Image (tube, rainbow, N blue to C red; front, side, top):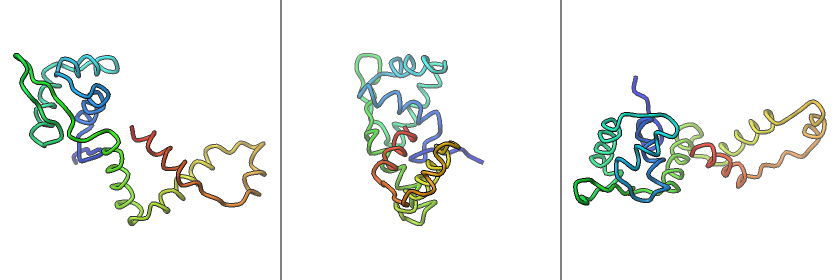
Amino acid sequence: MTRHSILDLAPLELECMSALWPMGEGTVRDIHRQLAVVRPRAYTTVLTIMDRLAQKGIVTRRKVGRAYRYHANLSAEEARLKAVEKIVSGFFDGSADALAAHLAGRSAVTRISPSTAPAVIDAPNTIDAESVLGELDQALL
């Protein structure tokens, strides 16, 4: 069974993109250094991943001297939006309200302490979809 993450990117592809997005543009060496802060990877592994991302059209590259400079064709915000759309269509029958309700219910359950439980139970059932989607954005990236 293959592993997939947002945009049908493999987990390491997503890690490389997450390193590239804040840079705007970078070489394999730049991306490799950024990834090494969290978890060391072989330079050739990052080179292969960036080549695959270029073949998929996720990034463009241009030759500068002896190296390629990579630039994302999709912003982190656009990727986040596509990921949320994919989740909504795949798990919530296309209903963003159903996703918001799910997240609001989950947030309420995880944040209730014995001292606040009566207040939560007695509170009107309102869902702030904007804040729930904001929390989802933060969780995805």
